[in-house]
Image (cartoon, helix red, strand yellow):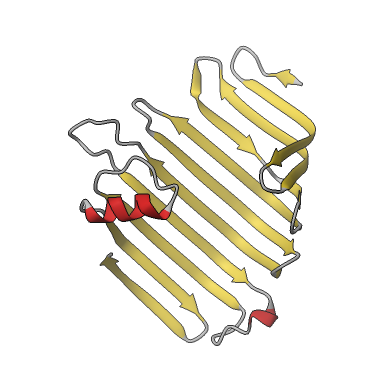
Amino acid sequence: NVSGYPFWFDVRIENFALVVHREAIWKWSLPLLKARTRPWQHSRVFLDFSGQHKFEGPWHAVLAARQLDLSILIGKRGRWNAVFDGESINADVSKAGTLSAKNILLEVNWSYDLGSQETPPRSMVFSVDSLKVPKNWALPLGDEVITLDLAAHLEGPIRSLRNLDQFIQWRDSGGILELTRIGVSHGPLKLVGDGTF
C-alpha cells in the first residue's frame, strides 16, 4: 500500500517476512513494516519497525517495541548515516533469556575508503537506559545497567572489516579506535572517561 504523494511516499507492508538461506535458514517476521521517503529525496529513508518481531532459526527470539525507528541517509562516495532509535523494548531470546530496555539509541556515520587521499570520518554513538538482563547471568553488580553511553570514531585507512585479517591490516596500517566518551552507571559503579585503542 503506497500513499502520501506528492509530498511523501508512504509504504505499508503487512505481514512482512524475510527468509535468509545461509549455513542455516533464518526467518524474520513483523506484522507491519512502514517506510517513507520524499519523492525528491530518495537518499533519505525512514523505517518504522514498531511492534512484535519474531526471529526463527537455530535459535529463536521474540522482540516487542513500543517504538523502533531507523533513519538512513545515503551520501556521496559511499558515505551513509543511520540512526536507530527505540523505546520500551522487550526481548525473549531462547539462548539468553529475557532482556529489556527503556531507551536505545545508535547512530553510525560511515564511509568506505575509495582510494582518495582524505580518509572520511567514521563514528558511532550508542546509549541505552535501564537495560535489564536475565538474573541467571549473575552479573556481580546486579541485573540492571542504569545507563551506558558511548561515543567513538575510527581512524586509519579501511575498506572493509569482514574478517580478522582485515582488522589486523587496518591496525598495522595505523588504525585507531578513539573513545571520545564512555559513561556507565551500573549498581555502585559510576564510570566516566575516554581513551584510545
